[in-house]
Length: 125
Image 1 (cartoon, rainbow, N blue to C red):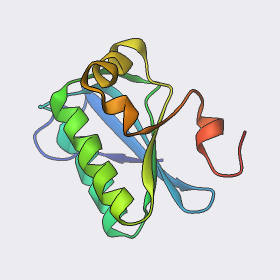
Image 2 (cartoon, one colour):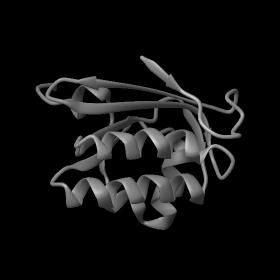
Image 3 (cartoon, rainbow, N blue to C red):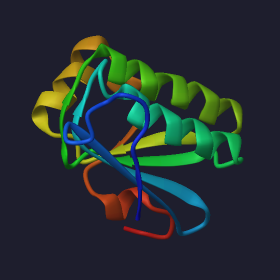
Image 4 (cartoon, rainbow, N blue to C red):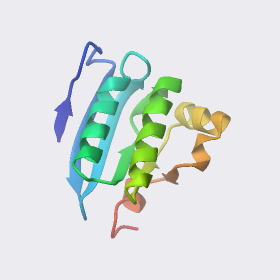
C-alpha cells in the first residue's frame, strides 16, 4: 500500500494507506487519530480518488482510535462528492470511540456501515 503524508500533520498521529481493490473500489486504511491536526492526511487521498473518478470509497476504520468533528466533516464531504458521482463512502469496523461520534451526530445514518472489510468489498461476503 502507498503511504500518504501531507502538510504539517505529524505522521506518527495518523497514517493513511490506500489501494485500489476489486472492481476499482478505492480502499483507505487510516491508523491513529483523525482530528483537526491530521484531517488533511485523509482528505487529500480521498479527494484524489474522487478526482480520478473513483466513486466507491471504502474506509477501513479498524485502526482508527479517534475521530473529531473535523475528521467527520472530511468523511461527510467525501460522501457528498461520491454520491454525486453515483457512488458512496462505506465505513468498516468502527471502534466504539469512533462509532460514538457518528452515533451522537447522526452521521451513522448517512454512511453505509460494515462490520468487516470482507462485507464492504464487492464480490465479498
